Picture 1 (tube, one colour):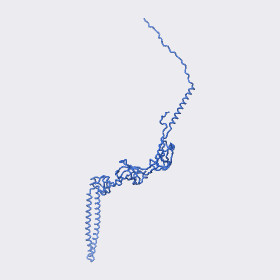
Picture 2 (cartoon, rainbow, N blue to C red):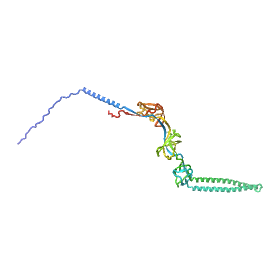
Picture 3 (cartoon, one colour):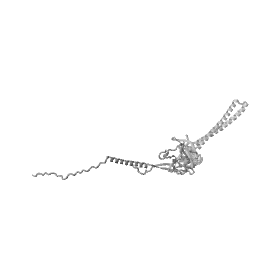
Picture 4 (tube, rainbow, N blue to C red):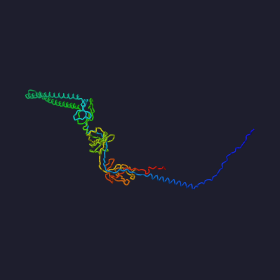
Length: 423
């Protein structure tokens, strides 16, 4: 039998040789402390430098906005909205009631005084006239009858008076004759009064009949017609308006509503200008004709009606147009003026907030403007005059035309264009 051969495994690799290196020398504690101190010092120097650069780059530069003082006009005006109306508009109504039978006037019709514009059915009123005319005739006939009776009573009394002188009749018969004469005379007076009454009734009926003709009381133009043929007009409680007639459309007026805060400076004769939407590029001119004393209160706002007269020869203005009116209250020509903003400016050195703006000057605050001299604003005391909210008149002060008046300032960083590092 073959027996297995035992063999020993031989490791062909030998173990690597181990080399031992000498250990590096350790830094001393004193050298380590000095390095840290040096690094900290460098970092502190860098931080201080960055902070100094940051502060130096954050400085502001000031730019002043200036306007040269100049001579010009200052106009103080009051603005208000108004309505264009004819100077005089006549309301034509009806005194009597009835059915409109005819109409002879329409819109824009030129009418003359006494011209018939409409006619109410006259038949009811004509019948009343005829009746009163007949009553007058009856009263006159009654007077004629009673006049004859009076004549007989007078003759009878005269006869009895002669007979009584000869005692041919009794005294009582004479008294009866006298009584009949007196009654006849009184009846004559009653008849005469009745005739006057009937005459007055007839005239009243004729007046009512004449009112059936609606006539124009003035020369003018019909601007409104409120009735048509066949319409019933009832004048029982109030006079109905049938036509509106403008006397003269070549002369118009603007009724403006001026607030109570502005009414104090407006007087008759003040010049005024206004525009309307129909002619936006045209300015109409007029003057104040009347300042009415009757106030109008709407939602606790008190206004007054200021009437501005205007010439309208070309008939461009129509009744009812809305006008934006500007009434000149006061005006100064060729005076030294500065913008109103100049008196509201003060630099921060004068106690104003940053940016140079300050509150509106009060009556106790002296007026002053700041003039740019040698690149810095210099305060110049002045005496002011008229103010139109855009410019202020300079009455006196060390200011002349051409001086650069500061109105505002702008402050900006000197190196604002460079990016700042983050700390």
